[in-house]
Image 1 (cartoon, rainbow, N blue to C red):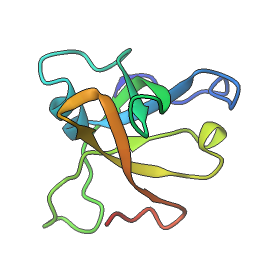
Image 2 (image 1 turned 135 degrees about the vertical axis):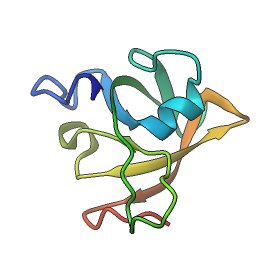
Image 3 (image 1 turned 180 degrees about the vertical axis):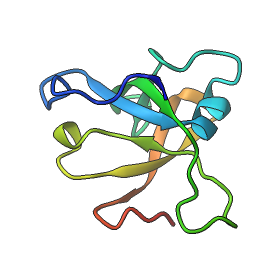
Image 4 (image 1 turned 90 degrees about the horizontal axis):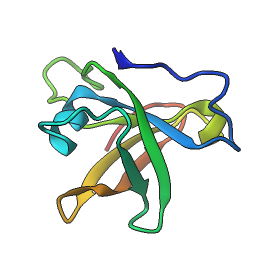
Length: 109
């Protein structure tokens, strides 16, 4: 892991934070350190979230599946365990938006 984990300070009234996997970090910031960078969920006026950590890639549905770009939000800010899959909007990392949300099952479309 690079950066930090979620902490008890990452609560609803604190600035929004995320942890991204290595695939998302390479895709969005190929030659930069993603820690400290920010994205917006839901388009240019969406929720601003700052990357605080990078974790390794893990296949979700099996070892033969390609690894997907992922970001993770703390339970204390997302209101339920949420894994979100994001894709760039117009190929710009600062305008990412949520393409998929899944609750407790943790699956991806």
